Image 1 (cartoon, helix red, strand yellow):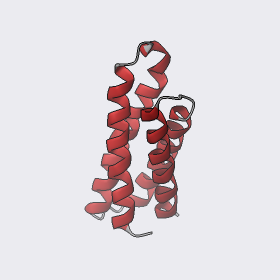
Image 2 (image 1 turned 60 degrees about the vertical axis):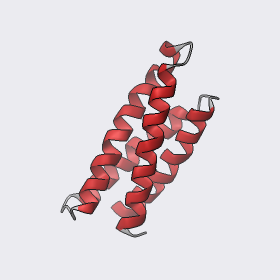
Image 3 (image 1 turned 135 degrees about the horizontal axis):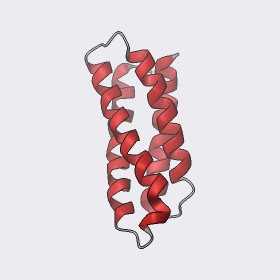
Image 4 (image 1 turned 45 degrees about the vertical axis):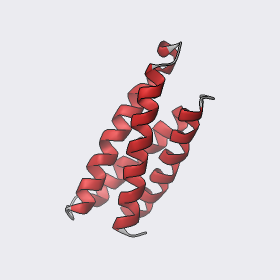
Length: 106
């Protein structure tokens, strides 16, 4: 796994989380989607931060990627509980990103 590949996974995950966040807000039962929305926001933020850390060759990139992997895993697990396509797409992107970040952190 190269920085470049991991950066791409992070940026893709960020995009999916932002889309899921937005689409969840348009669902009829927004309250039911609260955990999903909260984690989407947090996950998008850490993915952007992790990508930036790798791009700037931060001495903390490994630790940041480790945290990013944990948050992506949690977000993916939450999104996977919902049947909506945007949640399923997001869960897939989150789990892929978690795997990439885990490899980068090790």
